[in-house]
Amino acid sequence: MKVREILLSDRSKEACLQAVSILSEDVAERVDYVQCLCDDDPFLSARAARVLYYITDECPNLLDAHARELLDRLNTRTCSEAVNRAVLRHWAEYGFSEDIEGEAYDLGFFFLESHSAIAVKAHAMYVCMRLVRKFPELAQEFLILMEEVMAKYADESPGVRARGRKVLKELHKIISSKERD
Image (cartoon, rainbow, N blue to C red; front, side, top):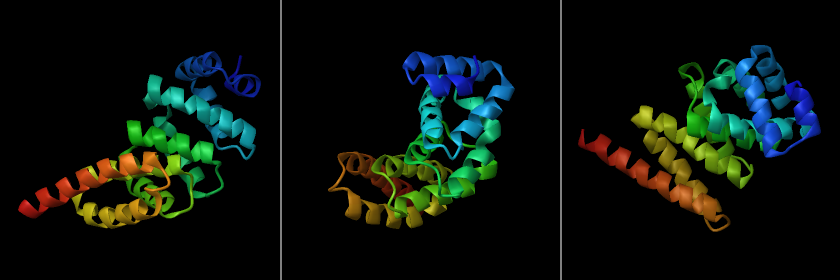
């Protein structure tokens, strides 16, 4: 059975794990899967986004070769919240290649500033923090944005509040250690 057929027929955990198993063995299926994830059909792309959660947990390096394609698709700003959330979660937990890191940071910054879903914002915080850890000179800029995000959304969402506090705490540590150097 092909991944596209699985996505269209079933959304169970077993089906998702079956799709991951196929994707781990078949490069051609990975190409088709990324097309499903980037598809304009919201049903198909949402199902593919669900599989991405399992890819992130089971074998996160599967989509390394497709990072640019995923970034370009998210940059169109036409993806569903499910796809945005899944891709940002993947990058927040697993990371991304150096060749897209600046653009991934900009994308995370965009989602934090925009009216996107709370879960998308929460994952975008960690995407940006991956780069701030690598490039501490970004910390001050990101701190300003995080303070704005917290002022706007912390009362609305316990998730943003909790994650935002962790990010702010880490940002203050990075900034203070940078000042000591």
